[in-house]
Length: 169
Length: 356
Image 1 (tube, rainbow over the protein chains, first blue to last red):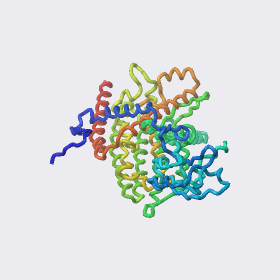
Image 2: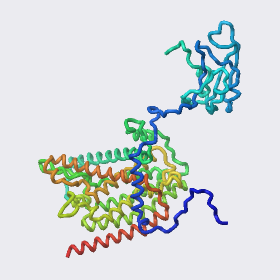
Image 3: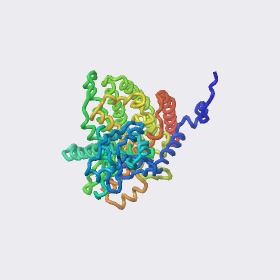
Image 4: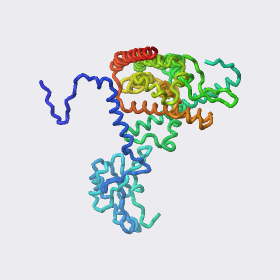
């Protein structure tokens, strides 16, 4: 059966025997050297990472933060919508009821006693951000730093909460 | 050759010279590994080692330290004596070639005594080099056979066959040169290429024997087991080739021997074909500066030429793909040897014609 070419990019291979100029190899070597030596003067593709950082796009989705309101109270009410929307099932939380005297800590009557995101499971899709009815979770422009063990990638509530506005440092 | 009375001073002089040459070749070999990685990197639009020290200059030290710290593994079913002898022999042979190389012009002291920048000016220098170079392949053969590994053995076979085939063409190409200069002594051949221009023609052998040079440099690629002729260690077929089973400093010896060989080969190439320590305008320089400086400039010129050749070896390695085994043999036996013989014939005819 004749071979039919589906790809438009395929080129017919030239299978003629090499002629004299090709058989002495030297012109081909000179040609090759011209290409490789030309690359010496071309800009390097590598970025010197810790010193130079690549700019992210404005829509980059990185590490999560848990937001506070203007008075520094946690916005999260532990409704669980973020965990529900998460396609990678990276978010878990435990809710608790606000006691009297804790009004300065939590914005509403219910809050997240524990809140964990497993950064190894997270795919940074941003669905949690979209699902949140309280504007409590946001994705930032940084990414998770490397770590030596898996435990280090499970971010607790303390790691995720943005600093209290009164603690300016 | 001048017979010298062997005195304590003579021995001391030679010991110092040998130490400097060995240390220097080791240092240059070390930094060749760094240069190789940098060359590879810039040719591929990368940066290469740049973390250890400025421009990554301490990278060879880190690599050496790493090799020393690695665990020594000797395979249970290997021939232990030969397994250790292999890399040692490779290293020894790599270092031995430097003995007959004239590194610079003689330093004549005020009292008339002469300090030769050459360990031994033997009158069969080129023969000595060929002898040592052919012994060098034993290091690879013994090591690969002793490691009791099929890939190593295949690599050893390839290395031996390759060395035998290309040594022939290499020797034949040099015979034309030797016929022309009428001497096998390295010092004599370099002295004949004095200056750059004499009696309306270039003095360097490259301009008199361009074909011999091309054959010689192609053969030295094969002798060095470097790309495009690195069939004895081709990673894509033979894992690591002859050094698959080697670890720690035994592996280091093999890698190091390769780079020392490259340096020495570059020196030989520049001595035989590019005038060694001779450079244009050297007579003018000799009149205007002190004899010591003349020698130092000569050594630097030779090293500069060698560095240029080392870079050329690297450029070629990162440009060309590897030859197939049958193509390698074809090139050696069907092209280079007839070409070398033809070159010999033409050289002989011209010498005869000029004698009459």
